[in-house]
View 1 (cartoon, rainbow, N blue to C red):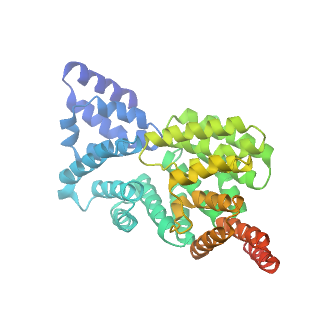
View 2: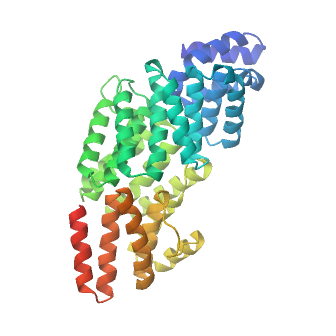
View 3: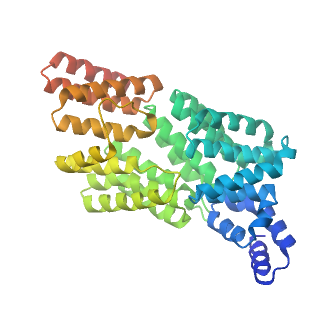
Length: 408
């Protein structure tokens, strides 16, 4: 079917005929192509069609919007989403509308930062999507979990991702089903449940395999995250193996965002293994990818780079980073920028700005405690203990270390 769609697309482009066949075949294969990681293939097919034909078809406009959003052309994605809405408004009670609402939820999370609307659209989509639209239900649940991560206790997102994972397991090597496994592992890790996160990653690598039993390219990010989990347990040899596997699989998949995250995740391990040049090179590669997509922020990449500079004693480079980012201990901390916030706290400590560091760390403690983000909370408490010790407050130092041990 994929070959037929490609042939029909090419024939239509060359001759100006057979548009109906091309539309029918692309519509029939677009869903499987999108969800198995063939984003660029689907983009090529849609590029071969006259824009006005796609705009007259609500479902193809929805796919066009997905392709554009995932490849970073947000303006076009928003335009095609509006076109799809106009075409499908008479079908507001069927699955096609549910697919569009799933797209709307995704865009609300990753483009518009409107998490209330994201949750609303995802919930409405789930009411319209039945068991036969399981791929889309996984996507809607993932978008819902992403909005919960940013606004609620982390346990809410974990529960939603577990539901999405259970559904995704029935779908084979689907790129978004594997993405759900990644984010479940991340959220378990953030909640302080590292062993559970390791178990999710190991199980996912065993599940998402090709016909020869080898890890599928869709599991590249899971392998990279497993490397991070081993790094945090100081199991550096294992960490190195998995980050290399994750990069190799992400390169096979050929999509920008997985490559960006795989490169970024690798840096702390490479630096710990003594290959700082490779760590910085990979962060540079990740940053270049992040600049090309509107769906991914780069603050965490620059924060990881600054951590390396701090470990090398290069306070000048770290200070330049903080000034360029406009950071202040009076800022309001947020979930999405926590890696940046923690790095800034390390800089304040390194500069001896103890009063400002303690004020900033108190803000980070409150947010992470409220949201159940125990991994980051432990990091904050360790820095609070260090700040208290340097301020000559040994008793307060002991209290912070005791709290960190209790939360671990």
